Image (cartoon, rainbow, N blue to C red; front, side, top):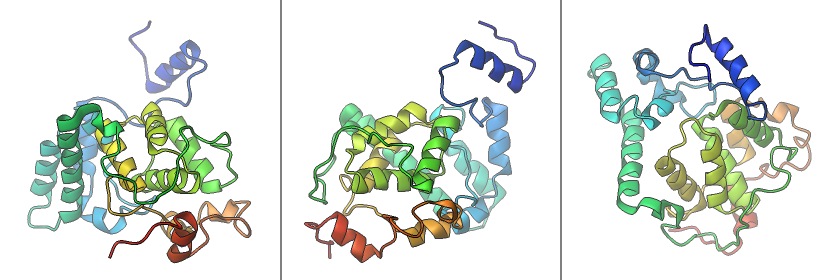
Length: 257
């Protein structure tokens, strides 16, 4: 196979010819340490805490480089602390700490990350495969997230949480099926962060299940999916209060006090 290319477009065209059945195009992330360091040094970490939950907010997009060892957590933390000395970086530091925590658990239990760390709190039964209509559910948000993941290998973390919650709690899909699907597509697919985050959503590694409603999704996407969704006026499964959703999804569940 060729090893020299005049540009990324040249590489992409070659890969399309060689692997015509492969999903998506080249990753939007350029590989290598120079690209990783450029992204790190351009990251405006002070804007992270206030906007990170919005799909167009400020996030680092450093996860592929961390996943593949191009950067280390220590390098990232030292860089932002040096550039923003004396400034509050608590939220971003916390996210780095979570990644470190997941890795330490993975180091200790290995393939145990594919097993429930705790009993589920929802008292429901899960199926073991993605639904037959996955990617064409009629829900503009979920179908768009699915297409983005499969074509680019990346999703904003909030979109990952919404997908996981929808699959596990609305569609009753076992978190392992969703976690495996993510790992097949994510360019930053890290088993520790991926699986334990799915378990956090499912409530097998947390005190309660993670759910969202339409108000939450509209706020952090600025309504971009709801405006075009065929179910926006009738049939949106997320158009409830959190109390209504909890009662409908988990009739046997009691909120911890």
